Image 1: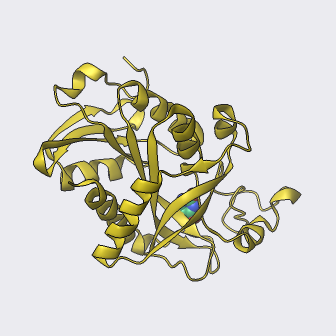
Image 2 (image 1 turned 120 degrees about the horizontal axis):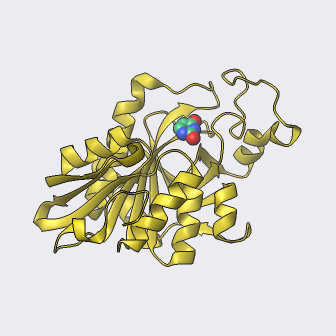
Amino acid sequence: MPYHIGFEIADLGDNKPEIALLSGEPERTGKIAHTYLQNVKLLSKYRGLHSYLGDLALNQPILVATSGMGAPSTSIIVNELIQIGIKKIIRIGTCGSIQSHVKVGDIVISKAALCRQGAANDIAPIEYPAVADPFLTVALVETAQKLGINYHLGITASVDTFYEGQERIESSANPHLQSHLLGITEQYRNLNILNYEMESGVLLKMAGVYNFKAACVCAVIAQRNNQENIVVADKDLAVSRAIEVAIKAIDN
Ligand code: URA
């Protein structure tokens, strides 16, 4: 039994899933399973990392799992999902935009990630690329186009901390950032990076090293050109769009 996910291969039945949808929040995991899947079975709630098994149309089994927040937790869950036979993972996350044309309510599809993550460095050297699977990524893009959802395809900054690492000063308990982080958002903006989040880097590096397919779609819930805070009122709609794009991209 893989220790952290709280279920094992035998719990997956005869028709075993090869695709997992991975989100940071257990509530989002439950929403995906109960809104889009049939024959939903709760596999585990261990440590708040809820996992469900269910079918998309045409009897296609799907695993929906929770990564928790940040790269260390994500690395553990992804490692164990691979051990129980998962071959494709789509992260459905949330993010903060750092470009003025990427608005709250839009979605960002990551083609690659800049990794500023300790856990990612345990997976592979810092120079090792964190790239999304091109085919899964094109499927996400084409689905967003079909659904008429505002999407942006580009590079994501995947970092370890929500406050310090994403240069939050006003909303942080500690307004004194280390000097190497002061101005980092502007540097990333000038490097044509679209958004900040905390899990895609380690996921995409693991995909390269462990040889599975991974992609990432994130709902934009903060616009860092305007303010540090999450725009809570717009979160549900933005997240629903990211979920719909991921689900329809794999529904065949
Ligand atoms: N997730 C992040 O990591 N940053 C944001 O600004 C929003 C969601």
